[in-house]
Length: 235
Ligand SMILES: [Fe+2]
Ligand SMILES: [Fe+2]
Image (cartoon, rainbow, N blue to C red; front, side, top):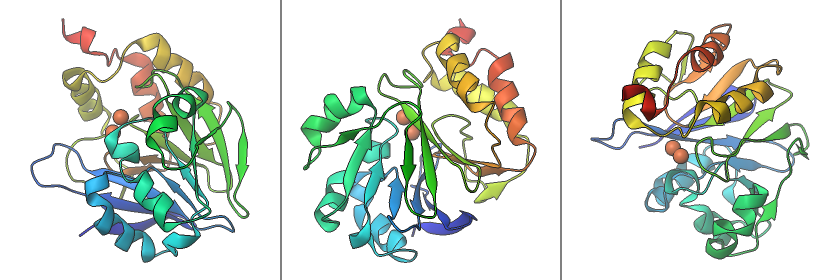
């Protein structure tokens, strides 16, 4: 059964830990005047995820489904949620919304722009376009009232950790990235960090692994700055 934990005020981490997978999978439900999901997880996990979302908000009231990039673990269940929530709109980067999302989503997605503020009413999501981190259509988001960075596949930690951690797991993270080879190039990652580092991030809501909280968040930024985490580092 999915676990549900409040990781910042009115922001809930829903985590799935499928047996035999090296990572766990999270999505995030945001309580606001206009409720939102960041990620949906897999289509095949929809029943479990819907039940978990319903513990914190009525899924039929969802207005925004933010898709960090087009991939099964990020948006596989989006059409199930679109069917359930009549006023929900899928939000993706201009590349995502004009390509794969436009074809796969049941209703037309909306393209969000770099720096755009999504005012949810009580919560404010700022969009950061981060192309090729790790897909060409990638975006991240920062919730301004709580200082929560929705980092998608950035800062992931393998294994099954607690909902939230203040531990420095950056060595494990770097080693995992090098063997998994998901990052295309360091310049793309540095361009993303250029956008992230000036923000007063209080916690990192990771799609894979624990939410990272407290001063240690800066260590994670530093670890990506200082280590080649691409697969080329292994060659
Ligand atoms: Fe991904
Ligand atoms: Fe992922």
